[in-house]
Length: 312
Image 1: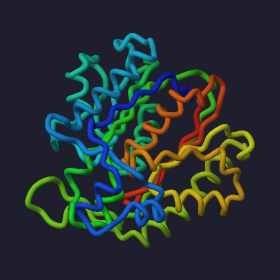
Image 2: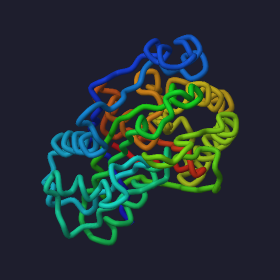
Image 3: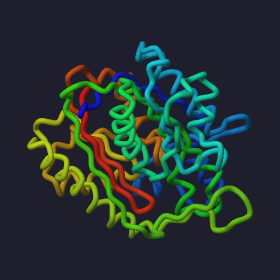
Image 4: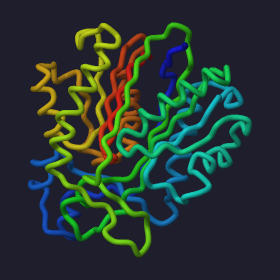
């Protein structure tokens, strides 16, 4: 079966960046309190006219333009999200219509929370194998600000809105490995917009315990599958939830910290969008180069976990 190669990335963010200082005007918190516990300094919140569709389509347009491919060659379009504009039609269908993408391909949303982008990457590989086409568009997008209780400082200071997109190519014998898992529970719980309450809630301690166990297990699982070591990996890109979580795992793995990319300071926790946003930021900074091997790890609501190894 073909592996996947990352061809291009894109991202789209709301116009409004909200600093920790601004958050302190809404709830009992401070820049020091947030940053020392999470590493987060700011996040983006959608305003009037900004939706999951505008973010997803913006990121997808950028990724497709940078890839240089003919969109007619796409074999699938997948959107990872827990905060679409509608239950149906899916956000992926809305993106397909907005961008005029092929109609004879699978187009769907994936709800695996912060692991969603990597779940979608694995699904895209299967769809390409079935269709015989070569390219997949995978998007991670969230508008979590519309699910949050802005008086609950335990959650509202953590999350942000944004979208990241990636174009992958199915390539014979390209290095690829993936794993996924789930443990049903309500440590992270979100109701949709409307009168339901509570909206987005999280048991922070339970999630921390879960994350620091899931990340090393995912990394070890991928390395075992591929018979590689961390020395063979150029970058490890984890879901950007909390700097303390990543630092704990780096120490536990006795891993070189410089391999682990971090950008939660600028975006907060954007759930399914965090890994593709990070990949695009790395791309723009010139950190990603042809031939490099990346290992990505997601973990979050569900509870779910996922990992994928691919090359550039």
